[in-house]
Length: 301
Image 1 (cartoon, rainbow, N blue to C red):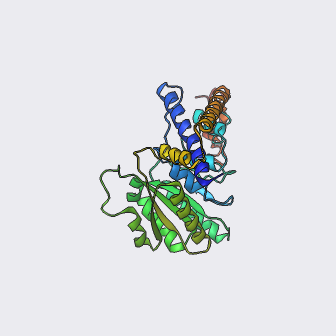
Image 2 (image 1 turned 90 degrees about the horizontal axis):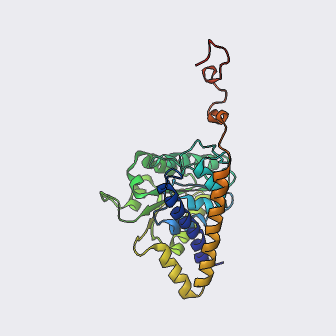
């Protein structure tokens, strides 16, 4: 399979998921859903550059990266509805999905907090002589957050094996005083600016990961996304023109994904809810006595 087609199919799965969950959210069937904001091509192209031993630390809007890493749609849907089969047992808000098995680090509902965690994780990999690296994503607005500066500065000083991918689309307000990629200079890390196409992003991330694993330090990559025309529709048109994709095959693939989504949602919706006891699981090493159930009249509340 060509890189473009691989990126396209992963991106389509994520887009169709977003569209379906948006409908369910408006209908009140689920809580809110943080969509990918048309950045699926960039996210998938970057995630496809990872080796099996690498890790990705996404934002809640980058669930496409989890699918690239092999997370089944149904597992994500269990997270969305907060069923007993949700790996996080309903503890996390929608979009804050992680999977140790698939090397997907936990996002943060805050703008940039996951960046410091990603940088620390990458440094730990270096200390342990782990041959892998970390890829993390952030929106343009996060480049003005304190956690961004702390993470990039720390990674630059320690030469942690990490790649930061910033999505910019020119829609953020107010506009930054300095181009985002230029901030790399302040922290002594490499800075690269590329158009948000599948080939350009994948090539930049492959090179940055190779540098990181060779001990040459982090890279800050700015992926410039054009929201019009739709990047996914544009990639589809390119693939059809190249003869890599045809409309009948694409229709069949989309129908297959929609069927998978409907079946996965029905399964997640019919699954039992987490038990009440799970409320404190992975929160306390030992549940405090005042939170334990009291059977005596004196201790009842």
